[in-house]
Image 1 (cartoon, rainbow, N blue to C red):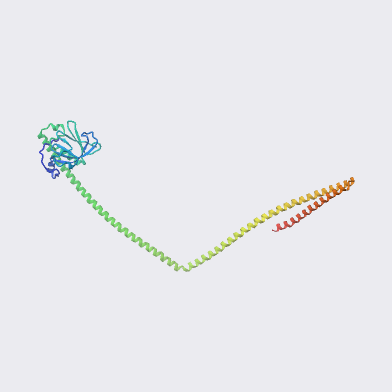
Image 2: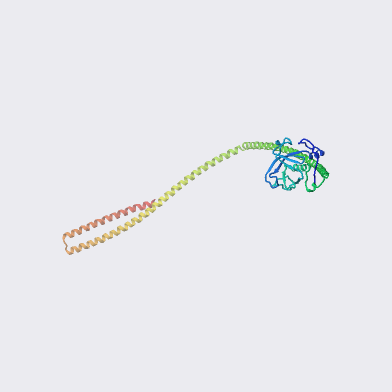
Length: 365
């Protein structure tokens, strides 16, 4: 709603906090100060946000670089915004450049100041304080009202704000009550959880103790059973050990015999291979002796043929009546040939004798 407030300035401390509803109404009319962010450039098209210390008194909004720069109303501010004929409006959803909780102070001349608060509550309080300051209007209709109408509208707005605050406080009380109930339930659940964890720890401790006892009993029973078995079956165990030792000895002897048999078999195989090689060699020697014997027979036959030819030639020479010298020469050649023939025959007989000696020996092996 439209509100124009022309109120008497009441001198109070700058940091006075409102208490009840009357205090809230009065706090709207007193001097207000705090941090706000101002969009640089003095227009709505700026890009840089500057954090400044703002002080509101009457219809003047002053801002300083820091709270230390403001010690009184005689200090020179960094800037001043006149609120006469100023229009106060919220920037809407999203704010300016994604900055929330922003509101705009615009004048009829086109100048505007964009401000941003830290929270929504601070934004609402600053906007209400500006509306209720001296000669502050929010639209053109409020400017056309009389001073009494403006004061009545401002008081009506203040009463509506008081009622809204009462409703909000009632809702807040309901939320606090529900929150206390939830916290109580949460504490009960936490207590129950602690009890359950405590019981779980006790159960785990009992389980570990029982497990250790069972393990100890199992080991004890195992040792007792082994001792009992050793005592009862000691004779059988000794017999079994003796039987195992004798079986191991027999197995070792059998292993030795098997190794000896394997060695003998290997030796027999080696001897067999050697005998086969000797037999093959004897066969080759026999074939070679037979070939030599045939060669000796051939040489003997050839010698006989030569001898016959020589005798024929001697007869022919005798008949032809050649000299004694040529006859002696021919005779000497014949004698030489006969001696060679005798030597070949002797060598052939020697080879036959050697072959006859070797062949029975190879067969006997």
